[in-house]
Image 1 (tube, helix red, strand yellow):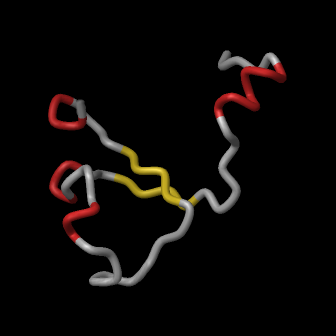
Image 2 (cartoon, rainbow, N blue to C red):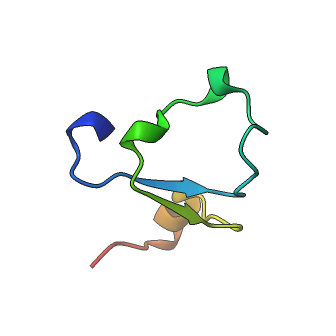
Length: 56
């Protein structure tokens, strides 16, 4: 769906130097990415659901 989005944000656990990752393992091409956010300790969705968390 990133091809149809106005803004695409990628959440990454770690931002690494260019050339570190194998391009064959990348799902979303960089031409579609507008922002990258590093989240070192992401919450697991199932844990949030178990706690009853919801978005406003």
